[in-house]
Length: 254
Image 1: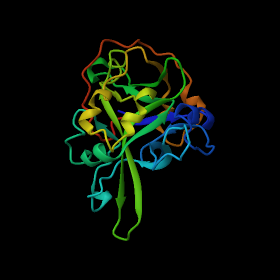
Image 2: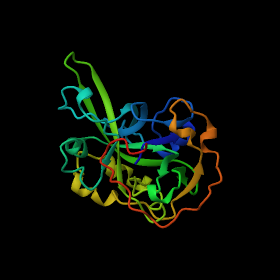
Image 3: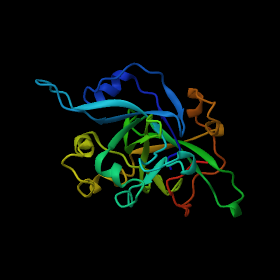
C-alpha cells in the first residue's frame, strides 16, 4: 500500500488547498501508477517580501524513489512506499526524511482486499476517498538521482502507516495523511528534524475515508477514465480484519 491513486481536483482547488502554490492547469488523472510522474509540493526557496502566501512550490517527480547513492536503478527495487515506522533509520530513506519531505496531493487511492486462499473468495478492489470529498495530502519523500552522465531524475515515495480500524478490513497499511495545519511543519526540513515530526506519521481518524468497491479495471494502467471509480455490487461485505502481508516498500498493490 499504496500502489495506485487518483488526482482529479482542479488546479484552482489545489492552489487553495496548498495556500496559493503556483500551479498550471492539468488533466484529471484517475489511475496514477508507479514510475509515472506525480505532482508533489515542496518547501520553497524563500517567500517574496510582502507576500502572505505559504512558501511552497509544485514540481513533478517519478513515483518510485531512488536513493542518491544507487549506482544503477535497474539493479535496485522500485520503492513506491516507505514504512513511516522505520524510514528515519533505513538507509534508503534516511537522507530524504531529514532533508526532502514532501506532500503528495490526491483525491483518493485504490486498494485490494485479498481474502485467504482457503476462503475461496475473489480479491476485490476498492476506491478509498475522503468521506467529505476534496483533496488530501499524502506524506512523501523525495530524492534526486544523478546518473554517470550528469543527468538527474527527481523521484518520490509515499509514506505509509498501520491502517486505522476503518481501513484494516481491506489492508493492514494506508498512506500517512498530513492535515493542512501541519503542512508547514512537515515541509520544514531546516528546523524540524525527523524525530520532531514523528507525531504526524500516524493513522488518520477512523471515519476519515470511505471505501467504495469498484471493478478490477484499475488493474490495467491503460484504463484511465472516471469509470474506474464507479461502484460495483460485492457478493459479501467485508469481514473482520485479516492479517495481510507486510508492506516492505515494494509493489504491494498487485
